[in-house]
Length: 471
Ligand code: HEM
Image 1 (cartoon, rainbow, N blue to C red):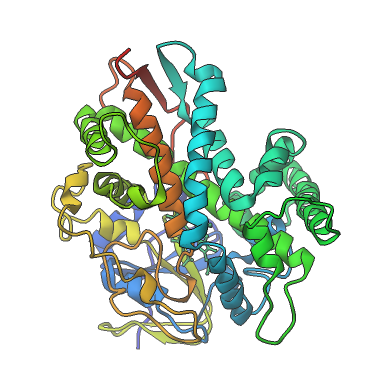
Image 2 (spheres, protein in one colour):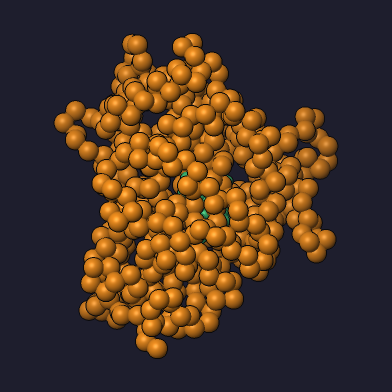
């Protein structure tokens, strides 16, 4: 058996780090052309074997835990930020249980309560933000959208107390913690960089915020009982009978905050940019609001949100062109044969999936580069393999050999998809009701992608112009 071809490079340790880091998709496409769907490149001394295409996606996402391990690939980055004992700092079977606990807090009941809360946050944001003064203006999305997604997610999923803390006492702490959530920490989490010292201090302070909330709730000091994710996690226990400790509740909450914040922020930003570039899509969204809510635009509700097919198609299409996570990694734990090839990947390697490559491949999507939400019309059920995965052990879902997997698949699949849809759908609907957006005069297309962050962001300031509807 052979090992996959190694991408040519001049310097042993550096390998392809720079080309990959600057423009991962350009790098993947070029290598695919030259070496095929399976190849190995050197990323700061680590051997990364990339497997592209729907089959490559399936190979990584549906790998058995005994063969492919996520925690060894991610823990350096996530553990200093989330805190110890959860997610990638515990055995995989505990993560599976933690994900199940989190899912208890992501039910239809909670979503119904979240929609008006999120809407209120959006309205409050544009009523108080200096970027939305007057009848028209411009807004730097790289500043505004992180605030908007943080406020909406914290008010709903994180709970009222966290929302309050994040605008007042803890705003800077969140920023410091967030600065520690950067790709450089994949490889050098221990570097004595100033941002890492701040990160470690911020992690403790953020955990304390949650611990204090939990303590107040336990002491019965909180008069009104909040049924939210903190409450949910406080009431869960592992199969072993052990309950989730207060510290682990706190760390799970930080993990949820981080996982949701970056992905939603990037998705909302790209949505507004593409809408600004295509007024006809804004019109389709507005027409749909009128159709579903009547011409007086009745208040948004969770039930009605699910009727907004155009909103859902826009989000799907944004996640096709701009999946926030471009590289999914696992450490190889036993020599692995790549199906349909004669390659065997040794245990010294990591594997990497990049479902964004197949999602932009002409083979699967006509005019793949074009932002066209209408391409999803009539395919509404296609991506519904989501819920088929159960959190049993070693079970894998069928139908993961898909070219389109922005939420992943298999045992590590995202649990936040529905929450993200609720959050994004409410934000988009609320903004479309109020504003029309356009790109700055003279700017033809959306900004370039900035890959220097955890997620594929728009290059700052990602400006859009707005005017009030009917104004
Ligand atoms: C896992 C994408 C929003 C929580 C994942 C994975 C992807 C993903 C691709 C798989 C990672 C892997 O296999 O290594 C997204 C996208 C989002 C989003 C595109 C929004 C547009 C959220 C939100 C939450 C969340 C809002 C929390 C409420 C998680 C968790 C995991 C996960 C807990 C599991 C990690 C694991 O099992 O290893 N997400 N996510 N995500 N996501 Fe999301």
